[in-house]
Image (cartoon, rainbow, N blue to C red; front, side, top):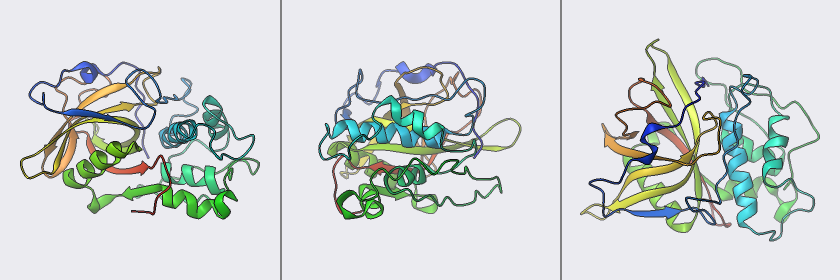
Length: 269
């Protein structure tokens, strides 16, 4: 996983809804534009340059635990900012999968796939953390997979992402999304972002159109909620920003995978 190093605020975050004036905003449970979301950030010295996946996992863990309001949580579990403190000290600085970060936190198991680029995956550096829900409800492994729903690769397009975000946020769930893009050097880059809300409207056929996401970014060096307009193009859901100071002149930013984390237990999708 190749992660871009950036440090300015996203210029399109404050754009108005414009032609999507009929869109409604939906938030994760306990989240508003002002509060309830989490935005952990990488160290500025580059020591955590590849850990966007771990930060997305930490954001969702901290949100989910807080949304439960201490209901039936294991005793003495790290909460809030402590989540990222534990996670960042438990993995090497390589890319991986937010789903596996969540799995490690709940069950202690961690089995990332080797990236297509051949780069190394992050390795667990300690055996004294993770697995906080190992015996939760009798089986922490089954519990976390039932809490998540995932789509990747050929399954991901503007219809599947839009429907998942629309349905999920109407239920109060939260998400991470993976994006990819090319820079002037010709290399493909990927990044993981935490999504806390959406602007959505229904098309004439009743299917949803996501017009913007509200996301936090581990690379912006501050705690900030960005509003990103989206567009449907070539069958995919893409960022719709004409001026992009956070990411620079890099062309299309396409959503390529995602996971929703349900705020309450249900059967897996």
